[in-house]
Image (cartoon, rainbow, N blue to C red; front, top):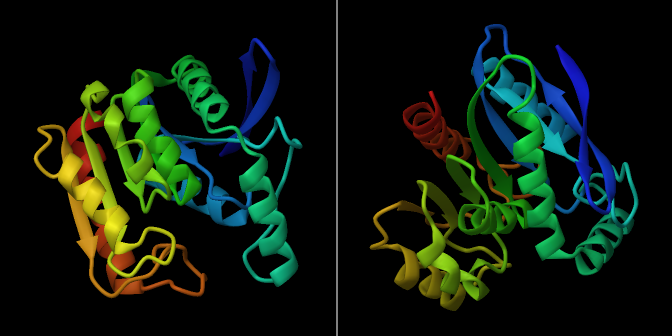
Length: 231
């Protein structure tokens, strides 16, 4: 079953897509979008988390730019749009909106109080920052672009974090990955996984760089991680 959640902030309200599990009570997983908005890919990911037994909530974090943005990665024009949204997006406000989403999602009828965050691409960065700035209970980061610029916040991590990085990521080059590894590899609450030969968005089903085997491996690790920390 799917529905809509309205999240309130001091600057206005925005909507989130909600997919409910078959059994309640259940923990929440907040699913954070890529640069294409809450599109069919993100809704499908949320649906998959619902099938795993979570209340899955996918907030429209581009609402401050334009509510309801939903494009694909299939055309050059859409990629141009997506990068335009990325450049216009306020990361700090986005993390505040995730904090508000966590608060609202925990109040959904049937939520058990536990809430994790998972994000991809831009959403991966936002998930990492959610680990340093929000009260979520567990965080799963997929190839968070720009994370290397924020690892100075690692000391604020209070709950477990799992991070998946593509070995040949065009947006997170080797030097950036080295910064992330140096800062987080020995952190007691972080778990780093590298996928040699993979490019950015290797877990995006239907995407140009999708790799079924490594996507399944990363997703299985995340499923085990959330099972250990949310259930």
